[in-house]
Amino acid sequence: MRSFFAALAITSSLLVSPGWADETPFLLERKIPLGEVRGRIDHLAVDLARNRLFVAELENDTVAVIDLDAYKVMQVISGLSKPQGLGYHPPTDSLYVANGGDGTAAIFRGDDYRAITRIPLGKDSDNVRTDTVGNRVFVAYGDGALAVIDPTSRSKVADIELKAHPESFQLDRSTSRIFVNDPANQAIVVVDRAAGKAVASWPTGSGSNFPMALNGKAGHVVVAFRNPAKLGAFSMLDGAPVANVDLCADADDMFVDAKRERVYVSCGEGYLDVFDTRENGYRRINHIATISGSRTSLFVPELDVLFIAARATPTEPAAIWVFRPNYTNQESLP
Image 1 (cartoon, rainbow, N blue to C red):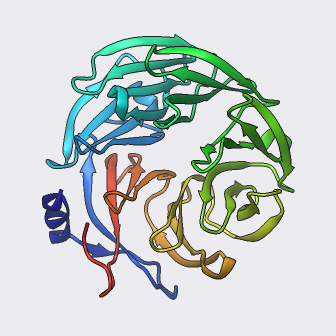
Image 2 (cartoon, rainbow, N blue to C red):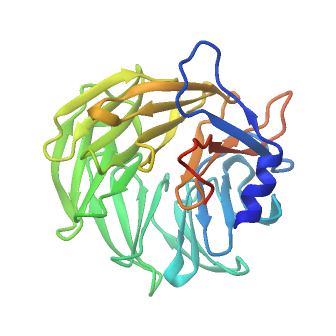
């Protein structure tokens, strides 16, 4: 794994928008070309054991498999239908692809990416979350449901009914709860996994709440709103609002860096925003230029790397941009 970072460091360059007081700048360490990929790129997932990154190339109906040791696309999974969400389940060595077009969850072998099966779900199959402890895979879809899949039998075993189409959702690893963004009802829905049903709905005061992350240390559900563009934090206990600050526009992915107590948000406006979460605050400390349309991303704590999916523009081909936090004297490479 060290070879990955050592080679990346050779091409490092600092990208920080002028005028911002930066505490932990990011290094853009390389761009991994995706080839002839057009239009929107959706979510990402990673296989840590093989050091591979998966990229949902929605408008190409494909998923790219990137070798992070060679920094190149090693395989392309085709025959999909507007792939949106991705999830890798290590115990069964399986890749899950949520197809927004035909409403299925496609499952592939993790070694050679041969198709195993497709599970019919419903329209707009979207975000995927894997639970290795509870041995379940969850997929958001339709007019209001989370599909519960048993990865051992590779079959849907239940549906958790919701009032509207779920956007981003997160599994609380310390409890049996799932937090779900419900922009149609301007709410965060709390699901009890054990009971298999929604048990609470917390008003957000605004719609367009799409990305979500959990700040476990602070006990906050963190949400990005698109209209108006704001970052909001809510208590995990009762949904009480604790922060509401400005954010870059058209956010679609966000992650908590527990090591540095930061939140990273990628926005289609063409920026990566970084927030300091210490002292219960959410203070924006970085506003980093990326490229228009680059709204999906994946932060991998085990690699200490943030991947941003940059769609093709008239001047830039589609690529995965690899960012790494700039290490201080107290930090070292993984």
